[in-house]
Length: 122
Image (cartoon, rainbow, N blue to C red; front, side):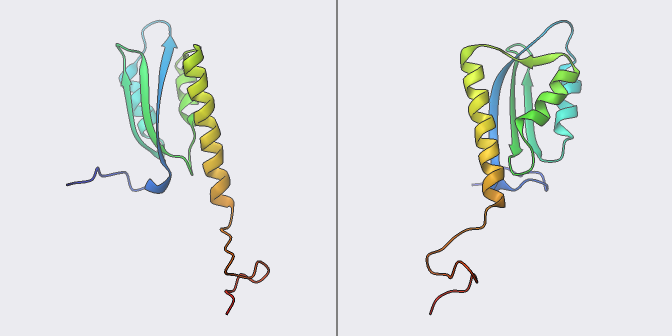
């Protein structure tokens, strides 16, 4: 069984996959947007489905967040759809991204070590 090859900049321990609906007016350059998002360091994969107006993006949440993708979409006058389900998912995605970043900064604690010195008890 073969595993999918990820980009070299991706830490697979923090790899997340997000799926959202989009809305935008006019002639949207989907291919251009997809390539622009894919060039961001920390983005593993991006798929834009123009018929369904959806985006599926995988990224290293320890390094990037959904806001980085949204900033590129905003440059092309595209936004995340404002329906109830999409807002709920987006809020959850933002919460988990922040949680991942906060947990990376935290040092692990163990009851087998002295909290002041970090050395194990004998």
